Image 1 (cartoon, rainbow, N blue to C red):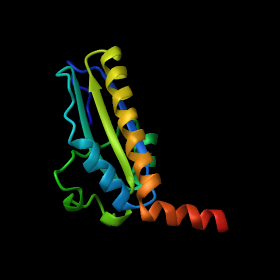
Image 2: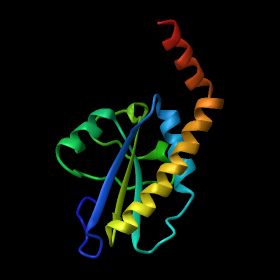
Image 3: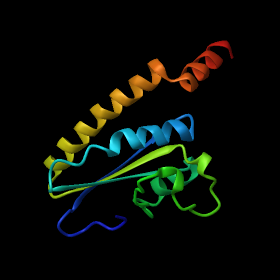
Image 4: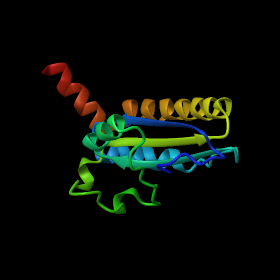
Length: 135
């Protein structure tokens, strides 16, 4: 979805960095099970490296990657190892700004729940917080 389709002129890319590939992959799997409710909105997920995310930000939408069922099996983009793909990239396209806003609001609420659960229950996140508190 790198180009804006004429029927879907409103678009937004959200890049959310996470501490590890495992957490980014878990967030992707948790969020992609919920289909977009409106046919007036298209959404795709992908995992990218922080460098790819910065490059996309500098170049506008840049080259979007489509979401695969199993993010661990995504084809490598360039020479980026899968474990370095720690940024959850979500692309939205919608027919109107209102539909885009409603859809993104729902996504951000769901992402908040996913991050809250990771913060409360995930061992990696707890270990990283402990390390930051001591360092």
